[in-house]
Length: 73
Image 1: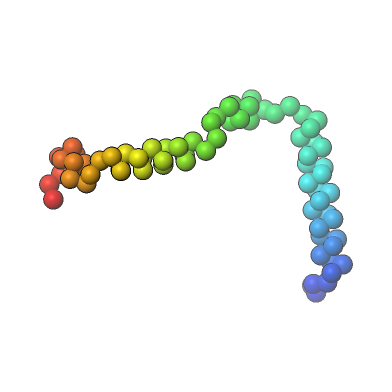
Image 2 (image 1 turned 90 degrees about the vertical axis):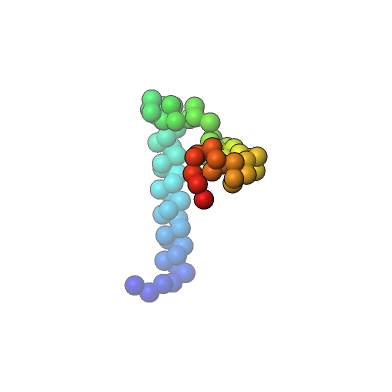
């Protein structure tokens, strides 16, 4: 299939109409119980955990971590 500007325009219009239909269908129905549960979770929770681990690494030196874990070097 040759790639032409009209084919690209047709594909873009078709994709937009599919998105529009999906949004309209979502507006007609309430979210499921599972979706409501997922919406209650705190967003970016992984980022918070990573930040806390980074702060812990800054507070504790490698020697003290090895001592705490009973690992000899």
